[in-house]
Image (cartoon, rainbow, N blue to C red; front, side, top):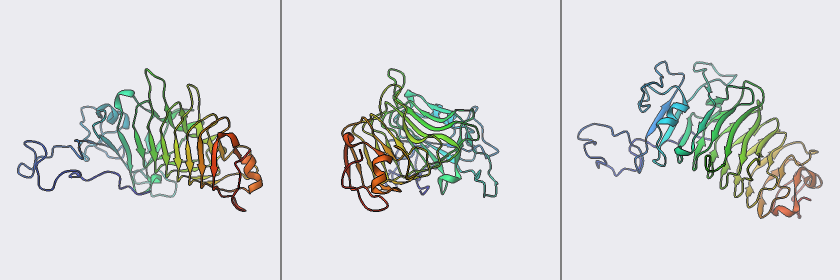
Length: 316
């Protein structure tokens, strides 16, 4: 899960060509716009002694913002803006030279669609983000087309939730979100909660020991239909992919190690329809597959793999 998510300052620009009148090699003035069509980078780093929110444009990495919330206020919708969050070493076996994690409960409002939040670390374990209250949510997405990557979502307090993505028009939207290259650890009750948010993509993440459910259909307003969940690794979560009554999802190429004698604890699509579940690797036998996964009426279950072979029929 590499950190190479932020393009260089000249990304998308023709070499040697001034892109904005008055800004270019001849003037040595940076336009602070990166990548077509002029997206800005906002820097956040609570471990930087110069970090401040008040009166800060957030575009100078030597004087970054102190909070992600302040950066979201500065972002413009659908302009290609990226929030870059500095690494921290809260990880228990590190030297703790940058020990301050992101401690925020951030809400992305509907007016900030199309933004990108990225933890700029070599590995998501080097950019920890935790909620600040019991039962709190580190990141709530109420905007369209948001991309989040490069964080470890954790919680020092009970009943924490990593990410909540929800749709509740006319105030909240949350569709088309992308969550990738993140870690959700065993201090959380829920990794990702989804509520009536369609067309989300969840891939290349790692979920370990999440206490209630790694990916969960909250289903207050509706189901997260048309969701793509693929190439994730799941280890020891109470429930892995729990999306009852969800339709038209693609769930493929995931690696799931969970209790082989569990009930609906690996992939649960009970009551759903038109789903495709394919090429997932499961830590259960073919006989246990009928219990750990559900159900046969939810769509097509193809070429999944158990510890003793591949089932020839969907789970019941």
